[in-house]
Image 1: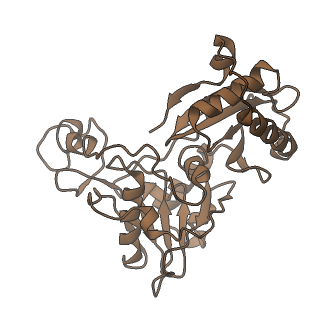
Image 2 (image 1 turned 90 degrees about the vertical axis):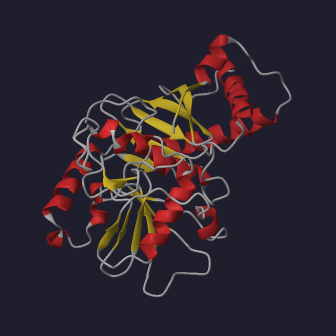
Length: 327
């Protein structure tokens, strides 16, 4: 896989003709922007129903996962982690005939959701959505998956503006415990029965996945391996300005690293939270960074609690300021 900037993750699979976007009536297959629109108008998709899909947005919700258990991990699985699953507990328990509901970073052929033959539901997190509220879009997909025929994928559509959000459907007292996988074999419990399309999609996804490990000693921190160096990307729950001041204090004091050869290289914003990023030596694995990360968490807590002025120098703030904003 080509080398990526540390704030990115493996490229998400693009929707095939099995995935749909919200066109004028919400029922046109996704095609390339320059391909003929499937409505038969003769115009390119981007100039026809693709225009409606591109503008089918509601007001942007800056923190779509706010109020859900594990908000930082929701953000990480949406933006950073190639292959992971999480069991989702529903309010009132599971419906009859649905043995489990599982959130997955990506599903075969970029399906928004899948009702398996046994009735269980897989909900995809990293798909493009048609509105400005990811939580509402995912809730709409989940509701339709719960009643879909077993053995069928659920297509995308524009969620009703007054529809429920994930916060309305998921148990607020439930846990959110991601399981990070080395690849996407969880797609096909019985690989010998997978269709050629799913098998090909699995091979492409595995080839693109960046090795990633969730740290156990701190929340929402993920180590990943790239050809030239490793990285730690850590989704933090603090207000942005407070966090940047704390990081700047540590950087000015020479205490923002995670050990020899490591360096805090900046941060980026993702769904309302700030994600600091560290460069790590290639030989430094996830287990090696557990203790330094826990020690850094203690230093950061102290730096956030102090009343000392923040070092607002260009060097200190420039080293930790966000370099961009995700969706």
